[in-house]
Image (tube, rainbow, N blue to C red; front, side):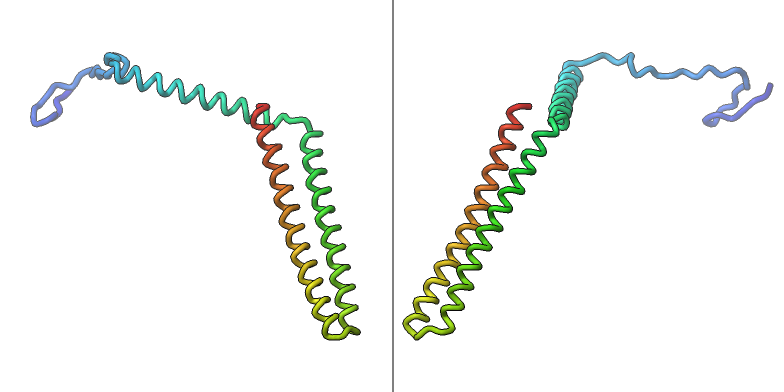
Length: 144
């Protein structure tokens, strides 16, 4: 045995028992209880969200396939309308080469009309596709 200097005082060496403060010895106050209730509510909300996400991920493959087929068919309709419009514009251009000035003005008017028609068709197809996708998203969100 010996002596050691602790905080400016000499002490005899010996077995040391360390006192450990126990955090659970503190009293639960109403503030900590409300905090715990908030945490429990957040955990429940997270569990509900996780369950909904699991349901969405477990959608039948047919549903995803049908949405994909719908998008493909809408894209093909859009392409077909674009091809038809381009053919009409090409016909107007071919007529324009052998036409007089009055016919040229008519051809330009027709070409402008078809260009506007093409733009309107493209815009309406995109709008229609967006509405269908939004509708499907709405129904899927309500189902789960």
